[in-house]
Image 1 (spheres, helix red, strand yellow):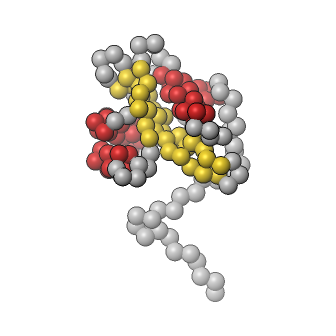
Image 2 (cartoon, rainbow, N blue to C red):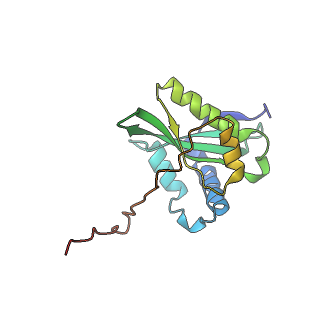
Length: 162
């Protein structure tokens, strides 16, 4: 396991990162939800105003075993927080402790940057991920409702009072 190396992703990694994002979407039963392309990840992660950062787990042969894709968010209650959008370990590398290595690297990065929290979401049915996360004793909140407003197609218009 200690042969796995965690490093910051670079522009050349974006096709493999995108493949892992697609693999996660398949696992989460939502492959049609992935709208990004490798080119979009490249522009959004390495353009003039990067929207995200990414850590890569790779073996000595350079095979990408997993990723942790994250960005800085802001909480009026907590200040700067690191939001972990995706933590993915490709199927053939699962069970080798790579998920915890990535999560710990993200936690350590947030701590080094003076952030107060790392936040993420996990699907209720994703028992293997939940078991891994539980080892870190996170606060798992069942009270908040996740909301999305799709703006690429105009989004919903507010209802008018009669």
